[in-house]
Image 1 (cartoon, rainbow, N blue to C red):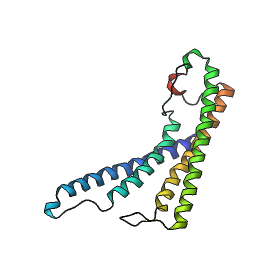
Image 2: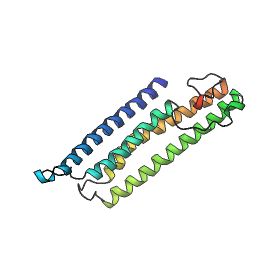
Image 3: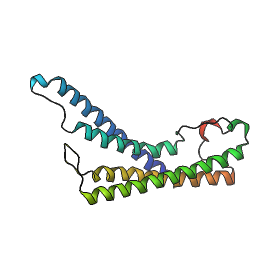
Image 4: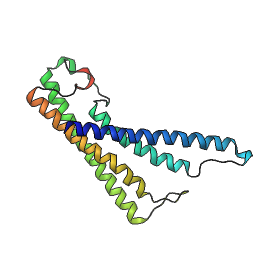
Amino acid sequence: MTKFVLRLANISAMAGGIVLVLIILMTCLSILGRALIPLGLGPVPGDYELVEAGIAFAVFSFLPLAQVQVAHATVDVFAGAMSLRTNRIIVAFWELVAAAVMIFIAARLWEGMQGKLGNGETSMFLQFPIWWSYALCMVPATIGVLVGLWSAWDRIQAALTGRETRPLAGGADH
């Protein structure tokens, strides 16, 4: 299961990275087009809409890998003063909270997508259905839920058995 989760998180992050690079290239072309308006060029039509949708997808795509690699920001003010077992219990608790938050976000994305699908709302310039953005974001958000649940289970196992599969956040694994 661990290899599967790691692979899913990496694929999600790679997809987000590809989309981010494409957004950067499109933005550069759009800026260049704006600068060359006197020569008959112009900005990429709907560039703001594409950036908005692409960045949302990229953010959701990077979350699973950050979860797996223990890369989320942490504050370890008291971690050094606590025992390793206590730190494991605290980390397991926060992994459960993170999984619950991902489930909540995915559920809200689903509800938002259903609302946009039902009302037929489209983007202003390109006129693409807004629900498409929600649907695209649902893919990495769902991966985030799976990774979050796996991560919580992994940390609970570590708290119960004392065997770590990943380092504790913030270097608290003393």
